[in-house]
Amino acid sequence: MKQHGVSKHEAEEEFKKQIVNAWKDINSDFLKPTQVPKHFLERVLNLARVMDVVYKDGDAYTRLHKCW
Image 1 (cartoon, helix red, strand yellow):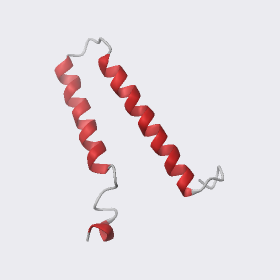
Image 2 (tube, one colour):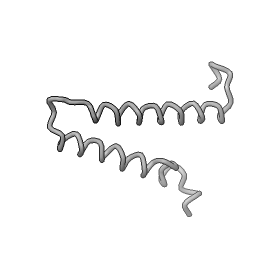
Image 3 (cartoon, one colour):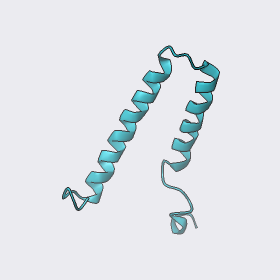
């Protein structure tokens, strides 16, 4: 942030945009034909989805004071 002279809010917004774009790429690539079996790709995609849900609002370990 200091290198580029942006605020914390601006940096967070840019990260959110990058996450949205990454999900678009993941979903579009998932629909393309590939040599990898679909059931394997579904497992990997589902793991990514779970991690997104779990860490969407931060993890409880890092922000313990907010959880308690």
